Length: 305
Image (cartoon, rainbow, N blue to C red; front, top):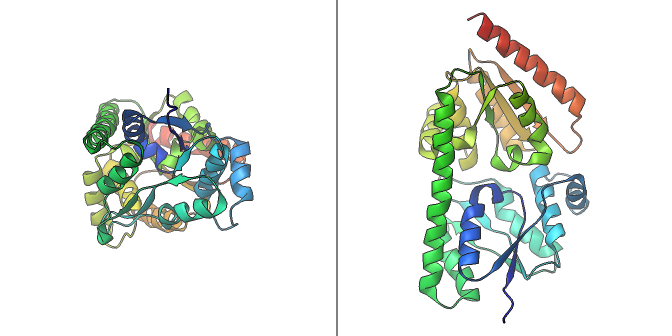
């Protein structure tokens, strides 16, 4: 029996956004997925050792995950994302990470390009990848569409779940952060657990309908450059009157988040805000002290009406 092609999936960056699409597509056309383990100190150290000092923490983590998969699979999936059209660019790390990985590792790299301005669409990229492993183009198309539908359904289920949380009378906070930061257990698990232990409901900036988020971001500023920043900032303004506090979480040294979050914080009135920057040496004790003070403030405001 012919051995299935093994596709390595680094557990970072777009993994938190598109994993269901990737899983449905590659398994549907006959491949096996190999996931890197959850982020740990060893992975961060491995990524840091092969990164330049100026790299942001998520990029270092991503390279650590690639290193973890190296020599363990037939291909490693590393998408290249440039933009989703004029005015909808993404951070340069999504555009450049493919070249970095390709130069650092000898493994075969599998990728698809998204650059709407140059006519490079996701569909074409998946067809190109798919026929490499399965010559039946109709099957390739079928599992791409199926993957998109399943990914969309999962995303909408998160949106609907958050809408229900919004209607509760419990204390609520909004966490404004990129998925690859806030959903990484190693980076932010202690923060999430702290709020849950305090019986505080958590809303996430990426679980608002993206079109709504972008429309609110455009009301805030029509010069925001990166699409994912628009989604985050739009969510903060949409939810500001519905939550007891807002937590901005970003990674060091993310230049775009540093600027955009600071501008948003200055415009967010009448709601307590805390800005937390995560790096690979963030001290838990100091962080917990800040979170405790923040929770004391929002509880006092709520008690005082």
